[in-house]
Amino acid sequence: GGTIEVTDLVVTYGSATALDHVRLSVRSGEMVALLGPNGAGKSTLADTLSGILTPRSGTVEVGGRLAHIPEGRQLFPDLTVEDNLSLGGWRSRERDPAFVFDLLPRLAELRKRRAGVLSGGEQQMVAFGRAMMSRPDVLVVDELSLGLAPMVTRDLAAHLVALNREQGLTVLLIEQNARLAFGVCERAYVLEAGRVVAEGPCAELAESP
Ligand code: ADP
Ligand code: ADP
Image (cartoon, rainbow, N blue to C red; front, side, top):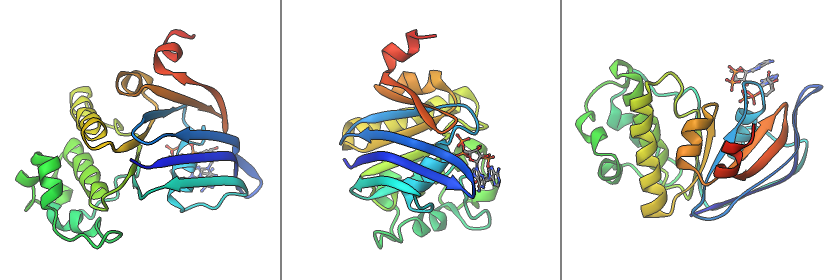
């Protein structure tokens, strides 16, 4: 798996500081959670890791290929599932989604459906598969559970865990739902108002008030 090394990261929107000297590191094969309330700076960190935002100062080093499941999923609703997947392969020139159908068999059943008619959970599965098309070493997942029923979320999380355990995929799971994250990650960072206010093993964080 890949690695993430963030040191002393400062990101601003105009005069507003969204990330304030953030330090975070994820080792190869780890599954780490990034928790925090709305507005804490989680998406800003994801967008900085993806290269969409440029740091004001500090460093962001990603070892390996990084893929990002964005919070908004951003599928093409009028394209089929397999065409949405093919579009996700541009970074690795991968066009054939067959290997993603092996990883996520449910997507093979949906391949000819238009993405726009699928349920929220199915759409999140497509977004997941599309991210895997670039054959990433690190996967950043922004709000896996957003708008999904708990059972659907658990099913998607189980697929993530399997990829982490079986393929060594490094995962940064960005979540507002701490209980979900504690259930699948070993370690977590807690972000509040742009600062890391806690970090450590999930078992310890889950006990602290
Ligand atoms: P999140 O749930 O991650 O906090 P939001 O719903 O706050 O996301 O933001 C949705 C979109 O609006 C994002 O693209 C974000 O960059 C943008 N956005 C968020 N806050 C502001 C703001 N204060 N001014 C302008 N754009 C914003
Ligand atoms: P989170 O993902 O944890 O909800 P965000 O990274 O979306 O937090 O936002 C962090 C802070 O930056 C918030 O105060 C938000 O309003 C602000 N923000 C996010 N995007 C923009 C933007 N495009 N322009 C201005 N402010 C933004």
